[in-house]
Length: 198
Ligand code: GAR
Image (cartoon, rainbow, N blue to C red):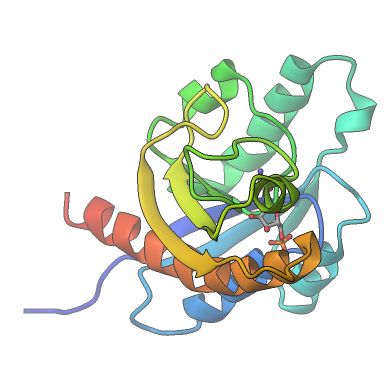
């Protein structure tokens, strides 16, 4: 029997440096990885990750949220720009805009996010400072499905790291980010293999 397997197409949404996008791109170079990047879209024209995507011949789109008077109009334009690439999964990788229900419901169980905390703890912003201020001894990251409620969808993978007494938000961010770079490719592989075997 032929062993040629389809690869799922990813649309990766970023707002900044895009280190998670880069690590996913590296995983996609493995012939056995069940996904490939069809598009990198940024809501910020100056996002550092866009240069990496262009250098690696990955198609890019920019939809600047500042050019829209409402979130619904911004998201409708994002949908229009994503749709032609026919992605199987939308990967939020440091995409720092909240997505409204109409957008999320267009891609049921097809949007993944990575969040720098052990959800359900520390939804939202400034996760590392909040964990340190609360005297926590452990933090981590969570890859989860996106639902209309912020940072609330089903968890796919979590990775844990210790918090040390002398940690600052910056040192903790670095430790968690290393785990994000392991967790996101693992989670995509898991979800993609599930979809491919449906
Ligand atoms: C990552 O730490 C990611 O978990 C976080 O933004 C960073 C993006 O880094 N996302 C959120 O806080 C979402 N609420 P990157 O641009 O280098 O991938």
